[in-house]
Image (cartoon, rainbow, N blue to C red; front, side, top):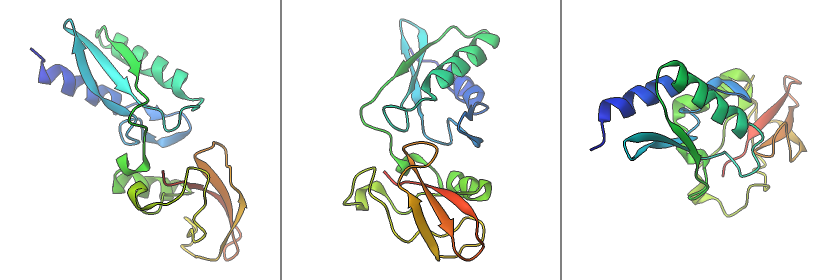
Length: 164
């Protein structure tokens, strides 16, 4: 029988782990933690990367294991790639945290897109001044899930978290 209080406790602990690439949001807020399952009464934390080549996944796995171990919880961390992660799993609160941090949040929902991860939405508002007078500089930002823009109004450069 699954113990809901153990699941809740684990999720509460994991909500304190920041995304290594975007420290203002947690791995829970990003939607990377799919849930807590049990195999032979041992908790298994299931995670999904924001994209299959995400370089932060090893750090995230290590952070999860360390936090749980330091709280006396013996758990396994398992990566699940299907279904693939989507920006739809981010809450509006998470998107606002991205914007406040200087990353333009994803626009729309993946189900509405007729494009792939590397397609670009042309109208991306600047997270600093909200101007739509922005210009794509590179389809790739610091990671493949972000693109690099420049605002022609406030002259700030920023990343846009691609909707996928």
